[in-house]
Length: 358
Image (cartoon, rainbow, N blue to C red; front, side, top):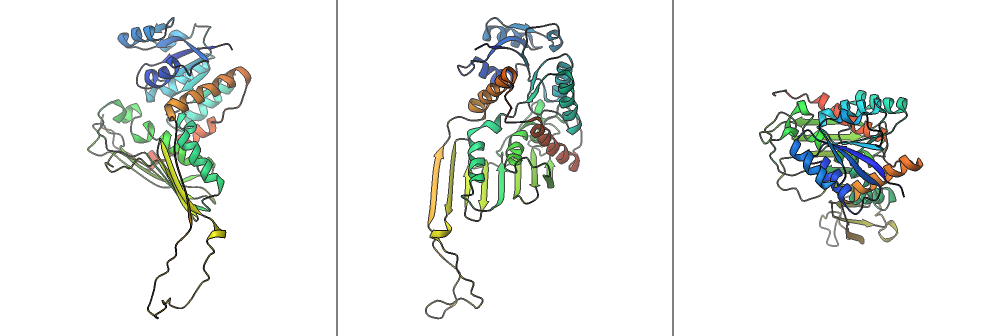
């Protein structure tokens, strides 16, 4: 099997600790890292040691005259994703862009259009859509075992103070742009990425926990025709977070899961016949008033997941990209999905404008 040549832009937490970690792992049988672009000299030299045979470059434009690159990974600052990806596409490179894919729908459309015009491929790194916990939640939701789904909650909560560049609006920081593509992708996925999905409520704010001016609280309610309500939040003020990422409430039971575990319970109609309606006041055997009450025969399942969005999701998306480039196989995550995720973030920001302070 022929390996593809890779160039990685950025050696920060994403470039080195996500994309680089995959490339250095035994799961990578598809790519050789040929170039690493990093403006910080110390990080650049470290990268040359970590990827034997690779060449360190200070600026991504130095890639333009390289003829041996099959895929460029854009793990630059969030506010640079669009500009750099567009530039690379125009120069004929296939590009995998870290999230956020773009700032808004317009930029998303430009990238998709540019790739098509230049005959190259652009991909969005939505590794959570390959994570075991998301795929399992999606499978159970679609199985029908829970009955009619009434509401879905998607959480990415915790308690944290931040003071890095990802708290700045000018750098496209904040919970929605930085963390949001993960839970928003899950929420939209559980709605089948329905194009008619709309925000029916949103709230974003900057609390005193953040040293910057971007949002660290984001609440979005999503609704699509004939589909359940999805309540999604990314809340940095929740010290009592119990690790639940997805919760599904339905007419025959409920489901919840975290990154490494799941559990759900449901009942079957044939084992629990529905009670006939009684219009008069209920009374017990002594004629005293009583409340409705029954003991359902529940079925319960619990289990754990091996791996997460990084240890499983990243290798899965890289494998798909390899076969998309070499054999033309279809991707399970599409650019339309990436565009829809950005649409939700763009709309939430438009509905909740924050003051620029820096």
